[in-house]
Image (cartoon, rainbow over all chains, first blue to last red):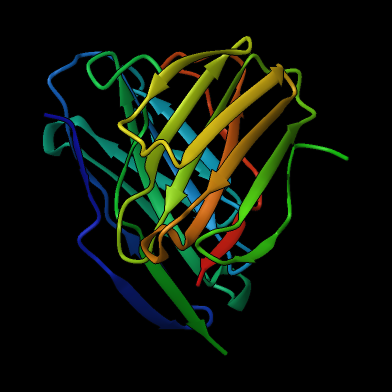
Length: 116
Length: 114
């Protein structure tokens, strides 16, 4: 069965600290896609990144970086030098052929609080 | 307007009311989705439309009735809702309903059923 686990329900850090949000997934497919979204208090899910299962190269975008490791079925997200504006709920999601051609499996989210 | 827009942003309704949620996407996408987000639960996919045809109905109660008049607009008609239907309703769109396509979300309608 497909599953996405975000074990960290809530994390609090002080501004400028680095923080890593964990995402562990389960799928039987060899072709799948992983996503991270940010949900600020306004409610909209903001797309951050998409990664396909054949591309294990880590990605960096400004203060954001993602570590994809197929060996541990993890797709972790690190924010470097966190800022108050990073406070939000972050969701990891999986899509593959088994879950349905259009179905995302979302984790339960990690609430990040960055304190000034 | 850009991206995906939703109206209204907030809605309070009684259990006997009828109301509609509206979603519009300005991205030229072919697929549109309704999701329900309740507190402490993962996002639940409710309906999927591809080129105005419904392709998924995830065992959603009949008191929720979707409508997709064209590929840019999606409605969710609500009637005789229950208090447990109070949630954030999110609309999304993607180029096509396939796994590798990124879904782009609107800001949601926060619904309270009294």
